[in-house]
Length: 234
Image: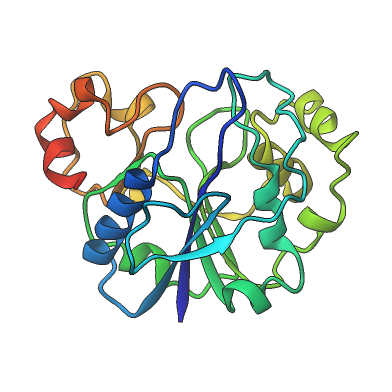
């Protein structure tokens, strides 16, 4: 059975967004509509208060929790997500896991994205220099263990930055794995609100999920005025 994992922790001081329990609850409802196949929905969190009863809250590990993003404090530090690449992660999350960010809107059927045979798939057309975007990736447990095993909290962030790979965990993933991994793109119905839609706010007919990486979250009042966001983000 597929495990859908999301993350909620207290962000560092100065970070641009706040993620309360309602952001997890809404994501769970959107995933239930978009992925009607049997699945396990998990929130890895340091504060499970306020989560709906059908959400499985698991304690968030502290590995690499205090490693800063090399691109500055207004960018998230998500290095703790690298533990998904640990060889024994199946004992916690099962054999096949999708990791996804909270700041997204599910707009269509997710089964063509997640019911695929590859060992590893990641979103990947949001930046010309950075190979992958960590907002969503799917992996078979034990896949690409070098992402976890080669990470050094003192040196790895700087090495990824020097190579031009933007972000925290996504920068390191791109640095270690290089080009050639299977990616979701616009052709699969995975869109960036900032890059692809903000010019007019229109939702492409083939959209399955839209991510709001960077500034602007779908729960903010200004964005809730856009009809398709208001309709789908609930």
